[in-house]
Amino acid sequence: MPEHPERSRERVLVPDDPAGTVSERRHARNVDELVARAEAEGQFRDLRGKGRPFAFRPEEGLATLDERWLSNHMLKNADYVPPWAETGRAVESARQRSAEAAAAWRAAAGPARAAGAAALTEAWEAENEAIRKWNRQVPEPSLQRYPVPVARRWERLQGDGTGASEPARE
Image (cartoon, rainbow, N blue to C red; front, side, top):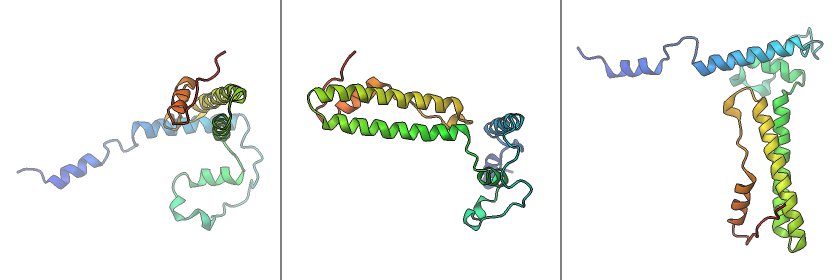
């Protein structure tokens, strides 16, 4: 007797590994290592709110009450921001500076454009360095960002219809 198609599909959708997928286990192991390292460094000593009960905030919503709620709640109450999140803010600041430098370069003419090209190249290099730092710090490879080579950025900028000239060479 042939197997019922719905049951065979069900079996495929249900993972064989009850402990989760390999990436979930790897992520859990990374989190455990980060927590152990932070605990060894004393980052959890004397946190604000120590000894007080956990207060559920209605604005967090019931959808957030999963297995990570408690740890996220504790970190938020302690105003803790992981180093990689701080680096993410630095990446966003670098991207903003790059966008401003590109806008200034587009608006410039003559000798100011050559100086703007050097500033823009420097801004792009700083942004790429911030991205590389981010990639070294993030706990999960899926969070990594890709730096764009400066030469590729100049190609894109020249191809955007602004009539861009070649950047200043050193």
